[in-house]
Image (cartoon, rainbow, N blue to C red; front, side, top):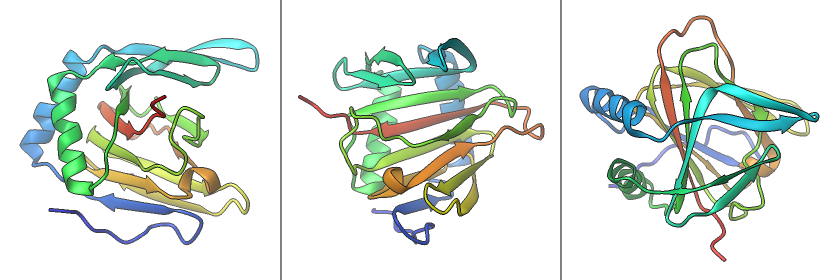
Length: 197
């Protein structure tokens, strides 16, 4: 069954949000399995000439050992484990989209977040849909228009699905603000389509 949702953006893109596509018990199982079994590494990149290692951890999986470059760092994809293939199939069956890769983020608590950015790296197929699947702590997620700075925020719940389509990455930035109100972990899976040369 295909999910349907209204566009949350007023213009220049399409964002759809689905509160939860998993039961609460399945969410707990998935979160525990992802935290324990994914090959997590601290994210490392260069900003303003300075090497930075984040508290947040990341992992990169795909159909092939694709290279993905962002923030002056290059990551080589690992091949899908069974759990990620299952989650990918659930997402694809519910959205009608197809993906060949997934960048995962592990936020241990609200002290870890993500600054304003767009997922517009050259490795990503232009204008392709990016799907964000969340397990664990509910976190605020914000959008900001690149031209007029208008903002829209929503809370991403446990087991929720967020689709960013069409011109969203071209015209909007997004962020995961830090907060002192969250003390538990969240795992975010961003399914993407990488250019397959």
